[in-house]
Length: 208
Image 1 (cartoon, one colour):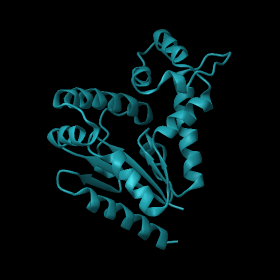
Image 2 (cartoon, rainbow, N blue to C red):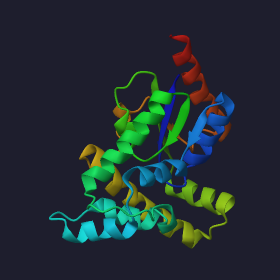
Image 3 (cartoon, one colour):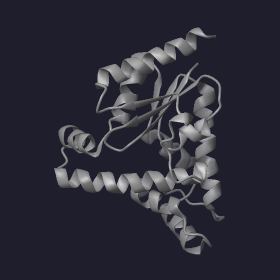
Image 4 (tube, rainbow, N blue to C red):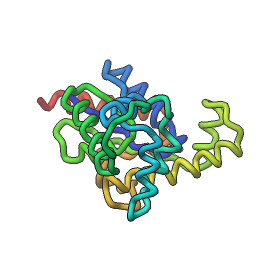
């Protein structure tokens, strides 16, 4: 039961690649579903989390991430006690570990590469691309204008850096040493990238 984590630059095609790999392997694909599960797990609302930021001694980068990424209708269940940032991060870790224990899963983002670092039967993938490639990918696949794509990439890069800080304590998250394979989508077609990951998974499965 292998697990694949995909950390990616926004617009590099990581989510698309993850979905293709999951379909090819017959694995479960986890992307937006993860944040929904975490929201249920911690039972918080965006309002409560934003309030927590205002009262934090250190400005919370995670709160900015939540306001931009999490839809309020996903996490409207209230609770009676206050939620702190670490509890939220712990919730993310617990949900990711549950998916890992179930196995046969492709997890996109949400710090999964850090949470499962050193775990058995995990393949960590980093998907990167130049800004020009990412703009072109968003325009062609998601209907962005070039200006919209540029703004979205800049914002997403800041969110990624801030969010992953809570899992690593680092400002830089593209260190190749923490990944099994790094894929430069400027140089590798989507089909080839898919095949590389599938081959790594098959090799991992054959090791058992």
